[in-house]
Image (tube, rainbow, N blue to C red; front, side, top):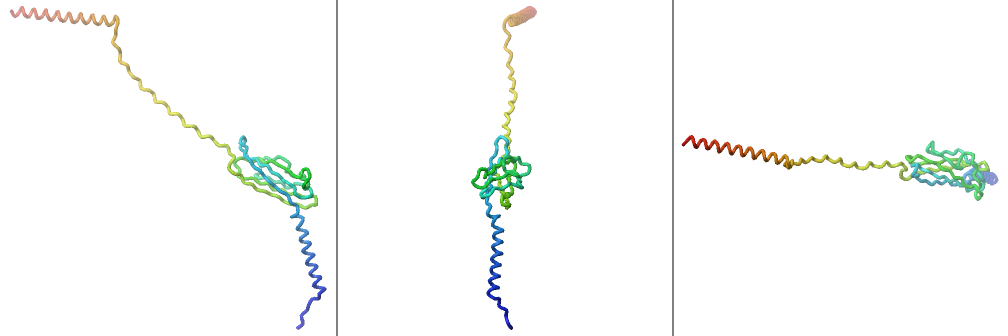
Length: 201
């Protein structure tokens, strides 16, 4: 039984083709990973509106400019303003305008927010960026607790004051009447006693 042994030239050809294939695959994957950018966020609670305010900062760290697309802020319905919007161009690294900022306002009851976007560079390479943040604490207005009610005072008891004896002219008249009655009674008593003494004798 005879084994077929590939020639040196054929081995060299196969090895070269394999290396070329690896090089092509590496070149295809390299542009996407060689377009760096950063997406950062800072948050604060607005004590007047009781809403979360997020400041987003997008920085291009590549040597070519890019266009923002597919920008999506969550929660849905958030108020958004600033330069981070679809169609906005971010300049190449080191140039004026290589940083874009945007502001997002979220209800105070929310627990977090996120931003997802796509950057399409001048060399037609697209790169996606996203960031999720979680709020620390709450931003909801607190309802002040009611102050304890003051106890209702109980009605005070009325104190009766005894009437004072009547003085003046009315008091003198009463005294005179009493003396007359006493004198009359005494006279009647003596008169009756005298008559009884005479009758017995």
